[in-house]
Structure formats: C-alpha cells, structure tokens
Length: 553
Image 1 (cartoon, helix red, strand yellow):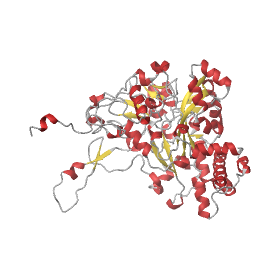
Image 2: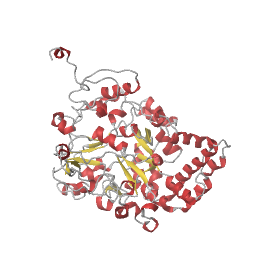
Image 3: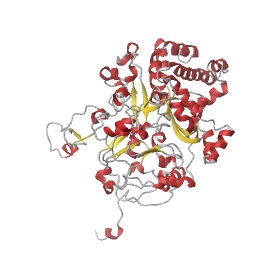
Image 4: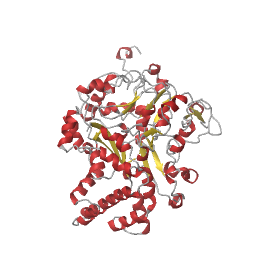
C-alpha cells in the first residue's frame, strides 16, 4: 500500500443557479490575457446541451481518455507512441476554434466617436483573432438555459439511446446546470499523451499542472483529455489548463471558483488513496464497476493503519487530520452521495458531483402531489426514468442503480428534515429505508445545506519542508513576463503582472481575516480593482495630491 494525498472537489448540483460567477472570476484571475480569449478553465453548462467545446463527450470523434484492451491493459484511445509520432505534425483529432467559439469584441469607437446623427450608431462585433467584422454564432454558454435546444440539444451525446424518452420541447424539458473544471485525475490521459512530458501530477497533492518550459505545443494533450479541459495558447504556443488555484491552496485558501460561488455548492478537501490500486481500478472490465472501483481506491483516514502508512510516506500529521475532517471524503465514502463525471473514460476523475433532485421534485409539484413526502419522491424516482437515465449516462457510465440510491438518500433527507423543521418527531423509518440512521442523516443535511466556510473547505496549508518541490515556490509563472506586462497584453487596467509567490497569497489570507491593513507594497501602473479587497488605498488608486505645485496655480 502506497498512501498518497489528493486535493479533490465535490459540487452539489441542486445548489447551482447557473449565474456563471465562478466562470467570470476564474477568467479574470487566470485567463485575462492575450492568447487565452477563448479559454474558460471553469465553465457552466446547461444539461441537456452540447457543452463546451461542442460535443466534447463524443469520444468516437475526439478519441480522448483510455480504453481497455482484450488483454486487460489500458491504452490511450487516440493511440500510443508510434501513432502519436506519425501524427505529431498533423493531429486531426483537435476541436476547431468554432467548436469553442471565435472570441470577439465590439467596435466601441463607432459609438464613442460617432457624430450627431438621426440614427443610432451600431458597434459591430470584431474578431479578437483576425480583427475583422464577424457574425457571432457560438460561445461558451450559447445554449445556456436551453437556448436553441430544439436545434442543438438532440446532438447531446448523453441522449443517445434514450431519445424516445426525452422531450426537447422547451416547456417540457428538464434541465440543470453542470459546472466543470479540470478533473485533476488520478490516471490523467493528458499527461500520458504529452510527447514532451510537460504535463505532470504533483506528488504532494495530486494537482495536474503544465510545465511551460517543457511544453512544445504539440497539442496531443488537448486530444488526450476526454473532458477537453486543456487549451492551447496561440500567442505563447503553450498548453494551459486549470491549476486548481494551487497558489491559494498552498496557503489554505479555496479556489477562486469556490470562493466566489453564489450557491455555495463546492466542497474542497483532502483524500488519501492507495496509488498501487489506481491502475487496477481503472482497468476493471465492466464500465458499470468503475464507480465502485474508484471508491475502493480511497483510504479511510480514521483507520490507524492508514494513518501510520501515510506518516511513513511523509504525509504531515496535520494533513492526515485534514483528511479526517474532509467534506469530500464524507460525501464520497461515508454518505455515498457524490458521483464521478464520466468514469467510463477511465481517467479516475477527482471532481465529483451530487446529482440534482430538483427535476424529480418539479415533476411531482406539477402533478399537485406533496413533493416533500418521501413516498411520493421514492415512487417518482423509480417511475421517472428521465432524468435518472440521463444522469446515469453522465455519472455512472449508464448504470442507473447508483444514481437511484443517491436520489433516494437526498429525497429521504428532504422528507426527514421537514418533520424536524415543522416540530414533529423525526421518522427514523425514512432514514432506515435508505440504509442510514437519523443522526447520520442530520449530519449529511448540515453538510449539504448549512455548512459553514470552514466545514466546506478543509484545506491544509503546504509545509516548508515541501517548498522546494511545490511549483508555487520553485518557479515563476512562465507566461507572466510575456510581453513585459504591457497593458494591451493583459487587459486595460490590469497593470503589471504580480509574480506568483506564496508570500503574496499568505498576505491575501491574512488581509481577509484582519481588521486593518496587513503589509504594504506598491502597485505599478494602474490598479486592477478586481484584485483590491477594499482595505487601504493602494498606490495609484487615486491621483497624487501635489501640494508643492498647488500653490503656484
């Protein structure tokens, strides 16, 4: 048994309101510069829908992830080293820019410089790639809220096989929101696809990163990732991806998407797993067994033998304690209500989801029956194959049973807590019907519904003895100095790039909890208000008051 630690995330889809705040804040923090205009490390998809990029789940077309051969070995779906060598200069398995979208701006000068006229001036969309006029035809959330569902939703890969049961009329279609980031997989196919070895998985916390110095821009990683969460920067010629906000994680601060989430649907914590079992779990023959196989890889941090083995592997004691308090461990292995996204890709994803109960509840409400009654909810889950079968295609490789179990637990919790909130005696039979007791159901409710900040994010800070091996301290951001930080490159008003250093984020953490200004420092150029926490007056925020010259005027 080789114990390793992995930072992981769980999202409760019932709490996502589709506001895209997480996407916008991530965009401002990580991809607000030239070459990344089309890049969204975090995006929120409406389901059913095509996703971003379009139809990324169609692995027959894009050839992402792993496949199991008849001899039990895993191979890349896109082919091994020989095939990659033969196609290294011409890779046809890449999404086109149109599958993402051609980024654009508007000709604002037409508005600002327009003379007085009888007609209102129009700012035409301009391509950020070519600078020419363009017609906007797609974007990262083009089919948001089922927009254009009659024309596009039928191409959703998850509908295949259940077409006769899905109604795509707008007023009758169920829908929910699916936020997505890089899965930071235990068995990442993007890393295995890279000819340069530029993509690596950090030993300390399992975060998957791109070494910008080693990247040669082959783009095999884009093809290899089945979730299409690796992007190509056309200005630097390098691959880029979600970093799990590692500089924030290293000082115990949650990711930007989690910090700013309006619905408070994200949970971040540490998971211990047996590295020796990863390949075996990813290689199970039946795709329906992949979910349970991955859960079997995770280790119980409360087990003294696991804790002792973790210490022998050099995992700090406070990390082991954090793993015991991890909300991710609780939701995945204790309450068993979180499911992986597309386990059939065999990458062992580490961003899991709690499927939404809301579509089932809405159907019951429309019939006029009590949508809080556990009997009605159980019956609806059993009878309503949609959206259950659709959810199964997303989270359990088509196996309906685990999804049913999760939805029944969520329904039981809903009904059990209603009795308590109304002042009635809790009905223990409801909890027992789903294999739980009243106490564990109440604790699950507290975690899912009213958990506080420190309960949702249990993130142990990095240790000084790990500093040399951590990317945050070992290197600078390879693209930070590209172009010398000119405002045109990084966006107007962004100023010069701040170096990625643990001291900066340590100060950020202290400023968030302090009553007064912590530390000083000046800002070159113009101040980016998105990075200002409201405390103090950074240099450059207001014009200087030149008292010496005021008397001469």
